[in-house]
Image 1 (cartoon, helix red, strand yellow):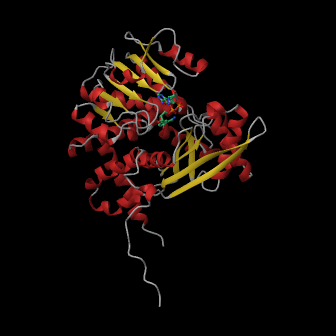
Image 2: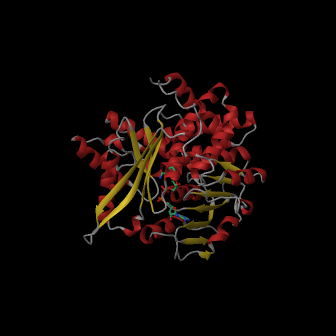
Length: 432
Ligand code: NAD
């Protein structure tokens, strides 16, 4: 006699559950908050709680000393209902599957929020790149690319830079994928060097988006950027560029923290000089024209704007009460836990969420991908103008949804984005 199917269950596999602490749990709580606003589309919400595809790969390489080392790599495609997967690749010693899953999901939300035709994906390798030689780094990158080559491609999933990866990493990834394909495939990654089909303005795009959204919000709450004090955590691609643009607009960058330490200057740091110091020394630590402060004291620095632009889960229930800023602009992905979000909300601190505030990078990545397909390249002015227009329009729509529903900007962004994703899911239907 045929066995009956086991009863249908919505129980999630253990690694997908919310009480599994970490960034994925935070993401699931954010989805739960938005579900009541999804109307009839809520019946599809389970789609958002399960990544479509998870690939874990072993990355063995020859080290310079002749030994062999193994690293763990991930590529997660959270959702592809609206288009190919899209999202960065992170090299960090603390990368976990939970983190990469959450980052891939936030990419789905972000891409839908700015309405670029992508799903969400993310990748990472559990490695401290500072401990590898350039040759070892290249071998790790190439072997990882080859391992995930079975699921990436210009029409399938398009990686980009993230923490500790850059244009050179993308050049190696593009070359490795192309060698395996037997043809140069520039569109397989974005954030490439301009000479290899990269886009003008891509390097600055995320920071420019942070700045654009910050200016839009400041204008709406009547905050004058000239003279405004800003504290920035993370002084890499995102934090460094955002700080530069705000300083150029007349703001004072009063404190900066990175992995090496925390520095401050009440009168405002000389941002170009600090960028040069970091380029030469790898960290803000030791910058002569500043004072050093305790890392913990960073969160209570008096300022109008706080920009977390390093890693996730930095603003927590422990330090959210100390934050003295009027506005938090999330340059990093997932820097604020849901508990901290509530505390900031109660304290009337306006949070500009990652899923819109740092969407400038993927927006120009989209331009890069379009340019690669058409082999026709645009001017930097054209790119920046298109970027600013998309960011401003998306932010205006989200602001309106927040006001209409009396919800936070994060929930409003999730409402706009999740509706787009689930509408696509519903229209496509289920196969078979
Ligand atoms: P990056 O590698 O260029 O810079 C990371 C910065 O964070 C460095 O200054 C580093 O010193 C600092 N940092 C690392 N660990 C820290 C710690 N424990 N405490 C304080 N500072 C620490 O990376 P990035 O590209 O600027 O990315 C930063 C954040 O922005 C990440 O959350 C990333 O996902 C997000 N993001 C990046 C892009 C992009 O286009 N690069 C786009 C969207 C979002």
